[in-house]
Length: 104
Image (tube, rainbow, N blue to C red; front, top):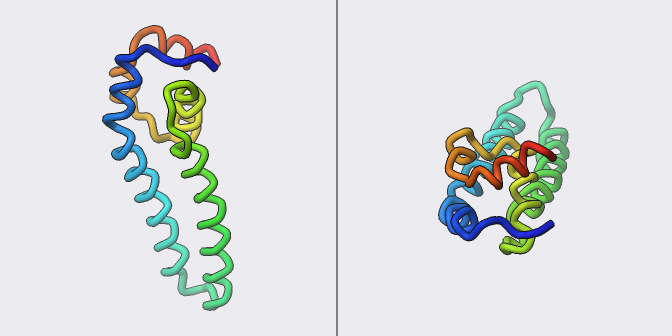
């Protein structure tokens, strides 16, 4: 996929840390719920927690590894798929980028 306008790229670079923090908070919250489940035995908690971390590590990697302008549109699609882009984030993007996101 081709790159996005420079203005959008600069904006996304500014909010990248915020987006990563939001994803990690969600992941950590689910990990806490697994650990707090009193109906599970400790080994079951361990197995669920391990599966959760492995699965969510792949999501973090998909959304944030190799963050380059040449592939940022793909990252935008993944961020949207993982419900990390809020309406406010989307409103800060150019009309061109918003249109491209809406046609995929």
